Image (cartoon, rainbow, N blue to C red; front, top):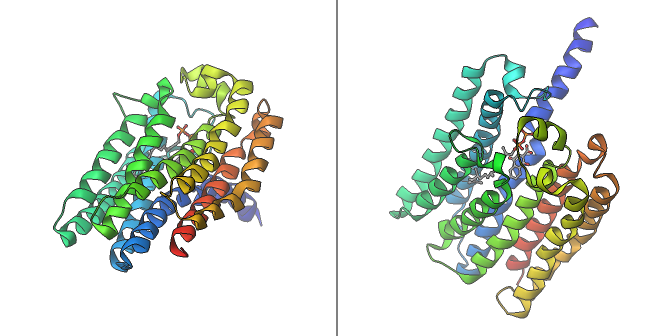
Amino acid sequence: MTTSIIEQPNKKLWLAAIKPPMYTVAVIPIWVGSAIGFAQTKILNLQIFAVFLTSAILFIAWMNVSNDVFDDDTGIDQNKAHSVVKLTGNKSLTFLIANLCLITGVLGVSLISWWQRDITVMALVLVASAIAYTYQGPPFRLGYQGLGEIICLICFSMVVVAAYYSQAQAWSVASFAAAIIVAIATSLILFCSHIHQVEDDLVAGKRSPIVRLGTKKASQIVPWFGGSIYALTALFVLLQIFPVATLLVFLSLPLAIKLFRHVHNYHDQPAKVSNSKFMAVGMHFAMGLLLGIGFLIN
Ligand SMILES: C/C(=C\COP(=O)(O)OP(=O)(O)O)CCC[C@H](C)CCC[C@H](C)CCCC(C)C
Ligand SMILES: O=C(O)C1=CC(=O)c2ccccc2C1=O
């Protein structure tokens, strides 16, 4: 009885540390890029798809676990009970796990490049990972300067293009356009994740966009940020870069509106606005899934 009471909060903390829903940010770029590749070539290499998906999940695990190590160094995670470093009580082990995820992820994309006798996929993902490192790793820590959302935009655009290339071994305007849309939705997640952290970030000297703008202005930007996904989708359909069926993306609009309203109502209440990050994850997942389906059913 006593142990179950002790174990319960620990279990919850571990779940909060691992953030299972967050891994959809790895699934969607691979799904969308591969779906466009399949739609255009009528061939799907399932082995490449599976390896790329696994590697993408490992890269996200690397980012998240190493984030807790680097944030422990700066002290910004003082109030974060669900930091993996705090939960394991062993920073070196945590760093080792993060680096094992990175190495395995790199091996996965290297395997794809080796199968294809073409280094493009590996090069794109390695450059994206190097840029991603600058978000939180020393000596850069560019996220502390408020550059995280731009870094996110660049990295995830590159990953969608890489996923397309992994299937088609070619370049396409549609994959570049889809990359912009997926990257905006991913960057919106990061933006929302920073809203409730504004106090801790201020104290730690992290100048996130929310610290720079204030939560009210940030909440006013969210509908424009998210709305651009739908405006761009419509534009790409009009320009005939996307097939008409990608307008399916609009089915995710209610989730987006729910997110916009939530942030608008609670931007200055950290406890309430903290779940906006997962609402943004839900919107990103639905939108990305529908975008891929739009290409497939065309
Ligand atoms: C760890 C990330 C965000 C958490 O940041 P923060 O310190 O504010 O949050 P905590 O409160 O949890 O401490 C992720 C940041 C994402 C990054 C800017 C871009 C990642 C790019 C990928 C690693 C590129 C390759 C991925 C792929 C193949 C899917
Ligand atoms: O923990 C977080 O807040 C995030 C983790 C993560 O992996 C990620 C990836 C891409 C965009 C945003 C985020 C997070 O916000």
